[in-house]
Image 1 (tube, one colour):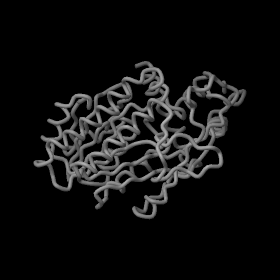
Image 2 (cartoon, helix red, strand yellow; image 1 turned 180 degrees about the vertical axis):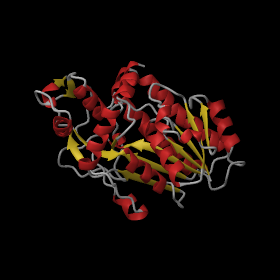
Image 3 (cartoon, rainbow, N blue to C red; image 1 turned 90 degrees about the vertical axis):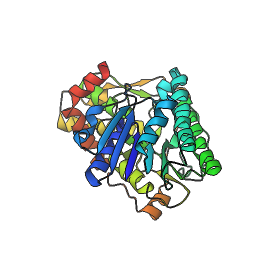
Length: 335
């Protein structure tokens, strides 16, 4: 089995590669453009395996994408390469259009052009986000596979567009496809500009902990290792098309999440006053979605996926990792 992974030096992609190297004998080709979000060290030595190969490629380059696919001849493609930070999409949407839409098109078009030579059972798994569905009120039911698309940020609009391209290539060109829409991920090796690492690092660095608005925005938190498990299960699909919403049923407001992190730090690294005193409420993000929540019944019932990490277990483990690797965080922030 040959697996091609785009964005395999990113947060979720590297977790997937670690899992595949540790649990299978698959050949893996990782293509990544090595942007600010790439973390080669996150493979934790798996890159030394003979069955792992890497190519530095920007998926916005069609010729490079096509050549890599046709030389490797994959059985499955996990497409994770994407610009993913909402704040950056608000400041500079063009990078998100270029990578998330044009980049996805280049992969899909390569598969169309090379179809006659590629494995007949090739599966394309497109990793997307729950943000394509827009926002929920406090009492609405969680998103599922039938939820309508209502993207509210340039980031979510770019991912919704790429989802639609995958759907079109499946319907028009019969590309066997899976689309997954996940909730917010957390865990080791996450870029420190993201919420949980930022809270942890700012807290232990005696810096203000910035919280948008009044902190009542709710997210459904999924540990990255659970997400990697779910993606592998989702790729075991016989259908011509399938889609899965993936979450852990772990909803929490940003302010309550911050309290939990600070309470753990108060016990682990006590100081004169609580870390929560460092919280600073800042002007809310433009178009800030109120709540995300995921109904994962479909992947649970059909693939047997159940998240192993509850926040009570995952958050302390994540905090411990960032404390142990604070020099890596500091280097990443200074890049």
